[in-house]
Image 1 (cartoon, rainbow, N blue to C red):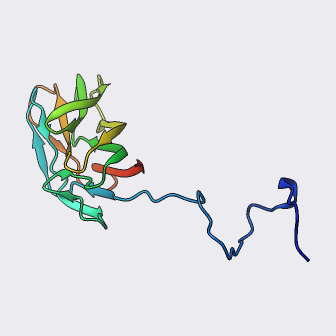
Image 2: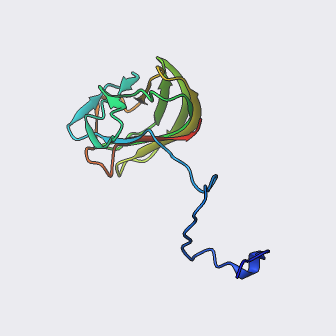
Length: 165
């Protein structure tokens, strides 16, 4: 028996369906994608923008992350996000910056006027990219002295993925 018309209320969208024809628009491919983190100690000088190396990869199936930078290799719009947690209190401002080809494109400044705890900064953006663009993360703080970055994939990380071509 052929079905001539399906009404939306008669389809359970949680069910699985097997199609014999071509289905388009039923999903997306968000690659390349990556996630890197800081696994070794890193000190950040006071009042200086310092590149975070993100020296370990959590995953990078397309090999687009190396030497602390993401180079997409596929043109499109990308969602990029990073977070850095300090090892000691920072008494003034903590800034995290996404750089594209050596210039800052997204900034997030955090007021950390607390003498306790380990402050963190997070920044994210959606950005257009060509195949040879590259993205890096820089941290800036006004602690008054050198401060360390907390290591581990849950504390200091950088990730991204393709949103659309």
